[in-house]
Image 1 (cartoon, one colour):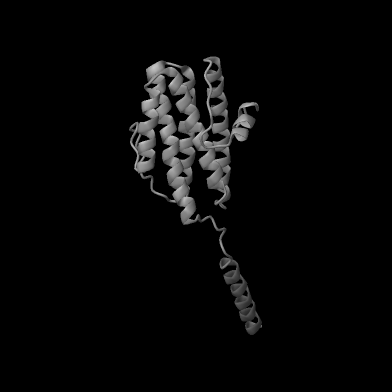
Image 2 (cartoon, rainbow, N blue to C red):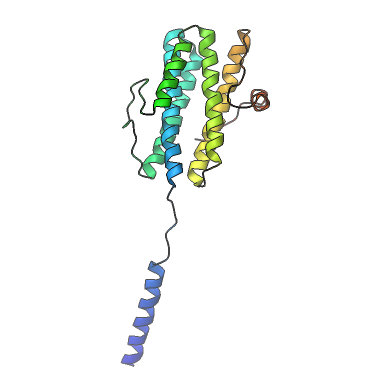
Length: 201
């Protein structure tokens, strides 16, 4: 009887160990995905900073509203970075116009120069930013397998499309037009001719 009980204990222990050794769900990200998150974190901050500058200069409420949306985009990226233990290169900095990536810093300066020219140029600068965001997110999604990053990027892209439509309405009412620089003309027309979407961040 004692031998039988010992046998049962050994069997139970064996299967318990086997259960403990089941692999955990892989929630890791690749180096490429990490690099993408770091880039998008700064690109979304650029959009926010530019729109807040445009709002302070021209007082157009659309700039403030879209800047608030961009701040939500920044927070969505930061949440992903926190989940995957990626250090924020800006360390939570809210200083306008400060970036660590040289290409983002240069882009910010170029766009701000356009914003300072006139309200019309500021609106066109906003369209350029959203044009670039849509393009960069589309390209990034081609190389991303992590489902949580995919969901956030699709949501950000949806938001950028809404912003592009909003700017296009303001631009067209001012009798000026925008020619896409990054996305194709056909994609641009598809976006501005479609309705605003509800984007879940």
